[in-house]
Length: 89
Image 1 (tube, rainbow, N blue to C red):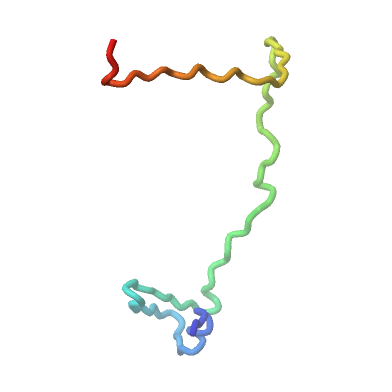
Image 2 (cartoon, rainbow, N blue to C red):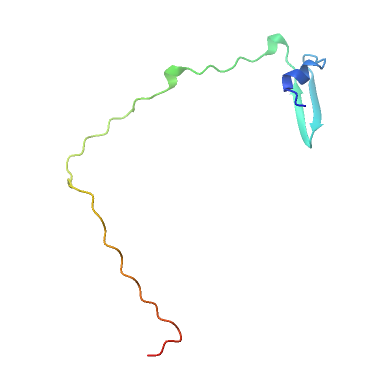
């Protein structure tokens, strides 16, 4: 049987301002209980801070070499010759 954390904590009488600690499967768990007025505001993500456009302009290339390429095939490599240790001259 699997309980969610909200379901499990809903069955416990928690007091605001207290800190509870317990060990679960070898790990220590700490639960800090806040009152309704103590809940910190979550940081709001401001979409205007996101910059999608580049902030610099790169100059166009002044010179260069244009290559015209077309697909082709490469020749197979040569088969290497192996000499055994017991081969005579």
